[in-house]
Length: 541
Image 1 (cartoon, rainbow, N blue to C red):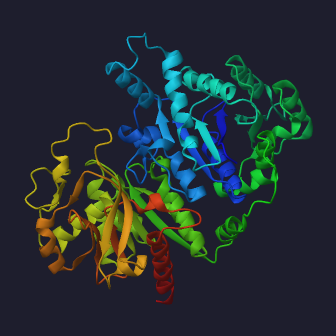
Image 2 (cartoon, rainbow, N blue to C red; image 1 turned 60 degrees about the horizontal axis):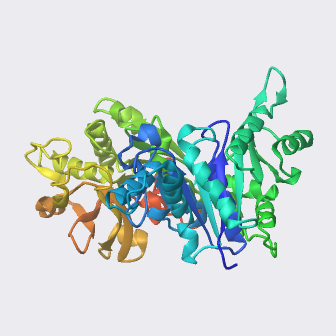
Image 3 (cartoon, rainbow, N blue to C red; image 1 turned 135 degrees about the vertical axis):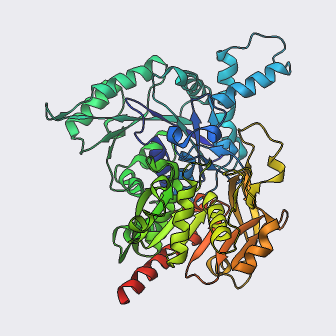
């Protein structure tokens, strides 16, 4: 292949149907056939990126190596493909308009009236085609956020229409993901919502090439024929997507439905070999046939919406499979934890992860949870704010710094063991201004972190404004808290651990963002391993 082929994934009827999982599954199948594939997400909201969005609104903000704050679907892309994404893989309406307005202010439109068509659609097309022009990929899959018919999605749909016309036959196709609901009263599946959804697309000038139909049950042949007839697609291009036990089943379900073969056929690419999915099947075999089971608490402030910690939840899936273990995550609000309740909440667990977050709310509950697991030798893992909380807890209750805190929690604390990073103090703009992206960390030999990673130089992704205050490093190390990982350029403490605890590690970065199906993150793998050992040791006692 010389020219990249473009695949667009749109959604109809309702949101949250799983366009990202379908896109990632198709990409995984094409990759398993030896093709070079990338996926990008175009979101119709006006925020320039999701960095300032409340996790209750949007779920987690995913961060790439190059420091982009992106949609959580990019996490699915990386977890399925085991290939890093970048700034170019996530574009919002806000970014498109920002780019166009910036050009207009610079006079690049030579005094012309700037309009949605052609200027906004041209900028959308430029971004849609960008990755495919790099000669790095055979396929670029573009997921369009939102639902067909939404006002804010119209410029994206128009851009896709233009691209299909400009590229000509055989160079692009549209997959439309839709819903086939089952009406219990009528005892039948209904195709009308899908027909209306396709009609919306047709009115915008786009004929979908393939329909992927979500349903809670198998779709019979007569329903497929009806969809094919009324939606102008071949019957073998009506693909069934039945609810799956796990998202990691979806690539195999799509293979069974021959989605990848239909795509290759429509793009006039010969089907030469079967996809190599042995590694994927091996992972699923471990996932579904565990020998062990552990209960691990995730203590955070956004637990009512698990998508706020999506990458952590998936990293536990990967690490569990690696250990032949089912990890049952217990979602615990840090606001429910205090000195009175902590024993009842945490005493029956095999490990505790204190999650990232921002702001004062729930922070004292996290500190109380860490005190309990430290004293009771329960495996502990702290990420970002979770690491900062374990530093505060240790300073208060072991190092004798009774008023120790973070200036985020208490600006007037006597012992600011966590403080705002120096370069952050003059920043007032919120969007995209934190310490973001991959940074190097040097790990000290002989430490638990070194045992986990097996190497002394690593790179991990960051998203934070506050850091360990090195003024207190010597005092805290004397008391027993080891700084085992340091950024070689800034001196920033990246990893802390306790010497006299079976497994107690806090990291300033976000290891969950680099865990994939084929490469589970070693910190999660070893944490789950420690939880298994803790549970077995309890049984022996």
